[in-house]
Length: 206
Image (cartoon, rainbow, N blue to C red; front, side, top):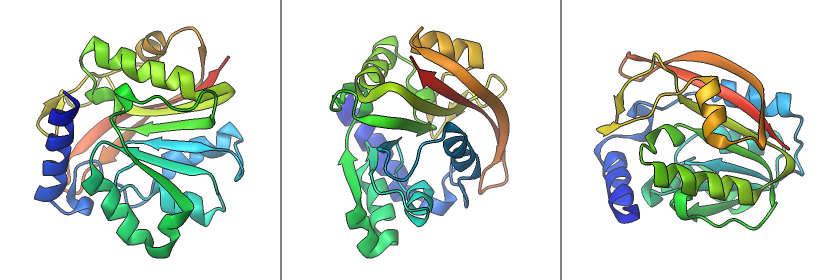
């Protein structure tokens, strides 16, 4: 399954420039606002799950964050960000990885950020694998930020079915270790002019 997913997302990046893909944002404003509200600082370790070609890593480097990891199943997506950053890419840890089978170092992360990965995990075993990685990697007192499709969001994206969420159903999937601290809906306008409703949630662990 990991190989199938990797092949799918590499093909998606091969078909269009990164700034034409449906999830592209010229500025990751909502992510940055929630990171700010969590209170994590430049010395805290952060992982961006499915970061691919996202500009979030650029903006965090601009703010002086020094312990950044970007994970994506598609090496081609990471290559876009690395090329854009040039020499600054050396300040980031890059990992080609299916998060559902990832085993991060225990309690090694202060903040877990995921925009538009979790809603693609429609199989229960994949969601369970994802939550295992989250539980293992995020330190007690750490924070998790999720941007998933809301209940009013699309039923499919990039040729795949998705799972839509409310704040309550997302919290139930993550389990009792996670406290919902904030949630909000954002209407994302795609490069093609369409709209997608995203649910954004900030959770605290423990």
